[in-house]
Image 1 (cartoon, helix red, strand yellow):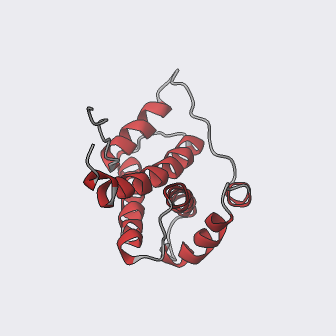
Image 2 (tube, rainbow, N blue to C red; image 1 turned 90 degrees about the horizontal axis):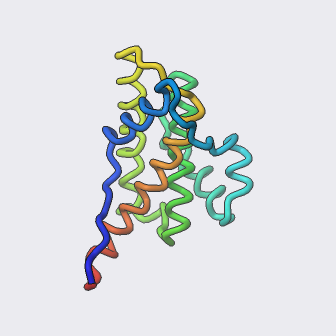
Length: 149
């Protein structure tokens, strides 16, 4: 049986998605809604607790807009951890969080430096989705890629 291709989430893909979404006539992604509603409405009660416990990993002094995108990415990785039955308290799992936050920050700073327009709601959605994909890829890298097909 042939293995399904694994798509590794990276910041260049995220940047391209955010820029494409801002293009005139581009279809809009469904934004995930507001952060408190997402935390409260998570399928798994652990998500809210994990999100709360991991917030100290967020940088303390940054632009409010970037802080919002980072919080959405952090929530996304918590949802991904929950979906994949991974614990954010295991060092090997938690190690992806600083990398995730660095990717979001790098994309945001690149957009700012280039003066590239972007849709804020779409960026929030993309940051959230990127966090979920990072957790899924971590699961694949650490565990599933070692299972014979």
